[in-house]
Length: 212
Image (cartoon, rainbow, N blue to C red):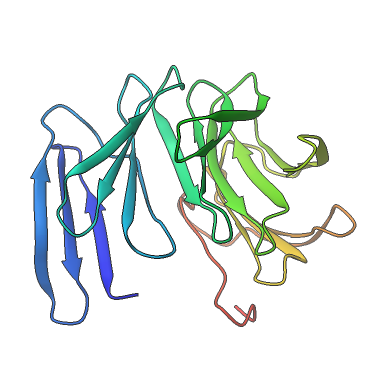
């Protein structure tokens, strides 16, 4: 929790030290938009997505140098998340696919959708993966089997962000429709809905204690 990374539409990627509020490194990738960033849990790797060709760049956080590039998506990657327990990375993109990768560039594809996947979230036990899509759905997948557990309808516009609670019993989703919905992941049903926002909700997350 001592580093913060950010990317921009101008093609720059910057890594900061949160402790002393200084720039550790900055690199330029002209013409490349960074749509998503994810740290590995040991803090040694940084994954970047957003390139039009669908590639994912893996950088060394110490040097800022590229370790390797993952290819497979045919459109820009919009969401990335590292696994904590295994050396895996999940990615989702405009090509309508969610893919699981290991560090040897082997791919396991969970599913193919008819619309771009906007956001993904991994349960803390790493058994389930949730996604929000442009076709207004929230889907929960069993990672081991690749089977869909629930397909949840409630949003009227694209779902821009999803987030599991720490215990995995709840999932929050936010959308272009200015709504936040809290779901019961054990029963696959809505708990409550908040519609008080004057603008689309592009990102959300649970606090560590799951209370907010």
